[in-house]
Length: 388
Ligand code: CAA
Picture (cartoon, rainbow, N blue to C red):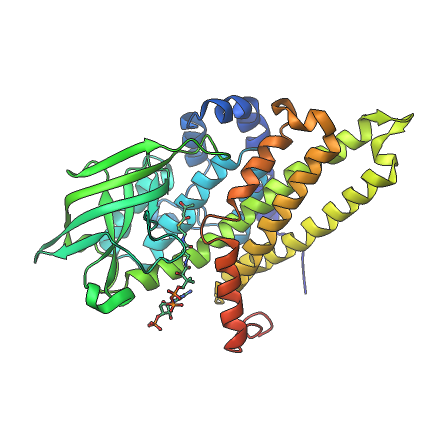
């Protein structure tokens, strides 16, 4: 077993670290406070290749491996989880979904714009009454021959106010249940697409999250992804990849808080010595380092599995479940180590703690990850792909 990163992977990590420290860090507190979408920062992410990292170069992607993506996500999330969710949704849910399951025409038309950052994409699955129960789609797509008519409402849509392309899930054949759902590529300037108000969130406040209304939106037939009725399977397959992105994000949030806690523990003194010399703090740092490293192993192994064309459904659920819990637990510990300073914005760890919470909720709550993992255990599938 070889855990060494390649020269290329190390270079990507270094580039992402530089970008995070030099470009993202200076304005991160203000963007969070003002819920200001990072327009210029996202433009630069596109220039650096961070918006289509593992997409083929022939579609404008950076043609890198999944491991490089996980490393870049981790570095960017250490500093700005709002930017990393924009990056994760665009890379994993939108670009990868189109590259893996779209038609050649769809790939050529949309991927170059999405990978360059000229356009940002959204994944419109959740509805007011279809969150964890994703099969309960109320949005409809009526088949009108050469086009579909889409009507419905979507909730909690990341990039909702800025994206130019939506992947919209809608029910075409209600009598078939989840087998009647389709996924469509919908351009946001088409008639009938209305962007709802921006959500005022606890964390990832610089990312824009909106509800979206679709009223009689006319979608050409060639914008359906895959065969009639493929939509739900498409959502599940794409989410398995997306969960690796969020697992990397959670890992980065945890690691960012940990690094700040270590630095603080070395310089802050109490009772005549640096607080890191007190066992109460030293043991916290040891637990943080160990559990973050365990999460990192799950995340990196899942990336490695994807690069080796293995099924990552269970692995990405495990990585997300573990990394999200580690992020929540250890950002809270980082605030504790900082004491009163941790409770104010200037020291960054309170933002990381607020940002951590969403990783236990979006792209499948931790409870949903337990469902995915436990079903695989009971079907006897769990260990096969990992040790094959
Ligand atoms: N790959 C392929 N097919 C899959 C699959 C997978 N990973 N998982 C399920 N399926 C298939 C099943 O085989 C089944 O097909 P058949 O009927 O042909 O056998 C079908 O999908 C239905 O599966 P289930 O019976 O398991 O469906 P379920 O209703 O029990 O739900 C679930 C399964 C795992 C709970 C699913 O509903 C789920 O993942 N829910 C969470 C939704 C979610 O993650 N939402 C996130 C929103 S997007 C977001 O957050 C993005 C953002 O902006 C940040």
